[in-house]
Amino acid sequence: MKQRFYFDTSVFGGVFDKEFEEETLQLFERVKLGKIICLYSDLTETELLKAPDNVKVYFFKLPKENTERLIINKEIIELAHLYIEEKVVGKTSFDDCLHIATATLNKADILVSWNFKHIVNVYRIRGYNSVNLKMNYFSLEIRSPKEILEYED
Image (cartoon, rainbow, N blue to C red; front, side, top):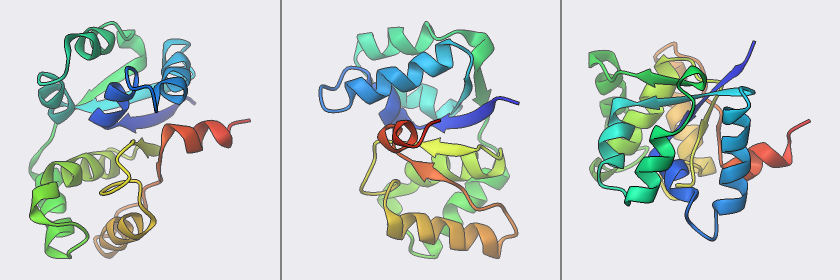
């Protein structure tokens, strides 16, 4: 069974960022080859509307059979609010919380992000997962593309 990785918006932007380009392109190559399924949400699509054209074009050229669009629903919004209420992050990080909640409730194998301040951060990850476990949800793996590639077989 193919692994399902939720990509937040920062990963798509990483394709054209000199600092993150190499690892990001390697990860997307795995999507193109059908080794992993790229999960993304309607929030990701909305955020990408503000992205440079080259990022949007890259996103829309991904093979549809290797991607899965997830819809943010009431349960996801409620979980995202819980992350804020539990002070995992502040109110200004609500969209980040929506990404975490979407990946959690859709049982993504890993959430992938380049956002080290609010997402790929050991203290935040512990916070998100403490809320998840309190609500009887699964613990979510959260990694940067670089971490994923370092530990790949």
